[in-house]
Image 1 (tube, rainbow, N blue to C red):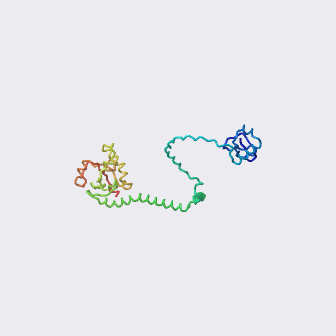
Image 2: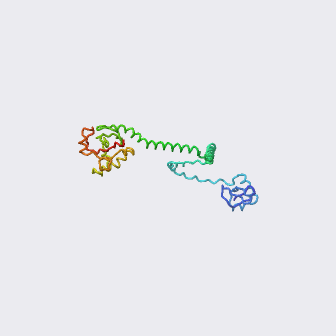
Image 3: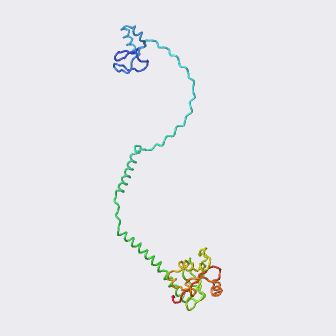
Amino acid sequence: MYICPECRSYFKTGSSGKKIKCLRCNNAYLTDLKIADTEWRKLDGDARKSRINRAIAGEHLREPVPVPAEPVKPEVPAPAPQEEPKAEKHVKSKEDLPDEAILEAQMLLEEQDMQSDKPKEPIDKRRLAIVLGVTGGLILILSFFSFVFPVFRVRKEVPELRTAQAGDVVSFGKYKGNTEWSVLARDNHGIVMVGNFPVANAIPDDIRNQQAQIDWLNSSFLNRSLNLYERRKLIPVDEGSDDLVGIMSDAEWAEYYGTIELEDDGKVHPVCRIGLVNL
């Protein structure tokens, strides 16, 4: 049996040592009278009041019932300590950052916004025109010298060609850095010269016969070694032919043996004739 200390209401429900809420005054704890319901009915009013008062005052109406000792449980070995899982790397949020870092980031963003909103400077058309004009002038000057310089080179060589005799070595044209030619003969029509450099390595492998090699000399070799002004000085090597460049034959090597220092090495050496009227 239980009694409420506040409103002195008693109840048959509840269990010893637990808080039970009173249904009348909402008291959170009822006092255990330590008596069964059947025994409570047998008591008269005075006994009930006395029992209630003593129970509320904390007196025990019954002797405590001995509680058997709990059996000792065998000690169970403690499990081995497990490794704690590694803590996940904490990603700092905006709230974790100090105020100084937040202010600095805000200042950087404001500067970027100001730079993006800043109007672009207009193009200085006058400066652009000056730069383009200077660049165009340099290109024209370089083009002029690249076109006119061969003329000065030819004019410098003209006095040497005018006085050249058989056996002399003169400079004419330029093929892979080679400019020396040996004068084979000089007559009333012109000067016959042979190149002191072979061109066999430059001739394609599919060109085998002599006529094909002569055609290559009058096309590829002529365009690479002589400029326009130098080509105008050439006349056909042989009468009745339009070839401006030929090849030294075995008979010519034997004829001019001793006239020039160049010897027959079995390689292709170009031969050309310069007209006297073009000097």
